[in-house]
Length: 261
Image (cartoon, rainbow, N blue to C red):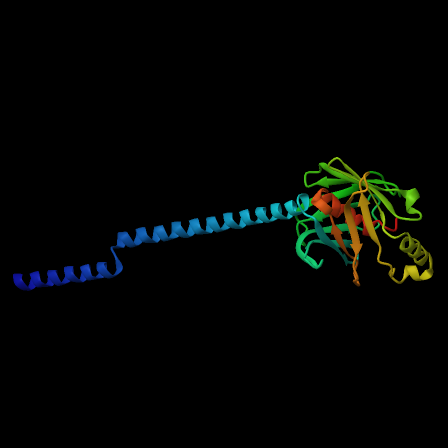
């Protein structure tokens, strides 16, 4: 091969290599670019996991805060299952209908020591608060309302003597002492007569009973009104939002779950 032909061959090879590098990049540059893409993808996945975790924490905090402070009304709806009673606590819309989920309560039936736990959602993995009886199988037992850490935030008890004619409860929370009783004495008596008949064991009571909770000055701090529904559903109102919503939710569920005791 003459020098001129050899030189032309080398130049063609160098030009081809430049074209390949221009089109695809230098091999070292391509490797570095690939590493940068992988690092960026790893950061995005990490940021996504962090975002999901923060969203879950924010959601739990938001749901708890809704009940713990500033809420002035919500709904309670019973969901019947085979072994437990469950209740959905939801925000209330303008017309009093259930809105977004605030908590899910679960009560074991035939428990020797009554306890109801309120969870973040239907998965029942994150407890928010609960109420628990101090005594076993006591008709006049006191129930402590506990936060997620087991610290007391309120209590309530049934006034057994007054409840023979008209269901009455005493509730304490955040320095407030209120007494709740059935709004209508006529409905209270009619409901008792119905429940004493054989029909009361097989047919749900047709009476819609409501409760009003007032402080020593007669100011209403909480009302529970039963709606027209095949399932037990209640609209809970907290005028002025002075009462801790968690304590109010516990009391509202107790009015249904413990009413016959």
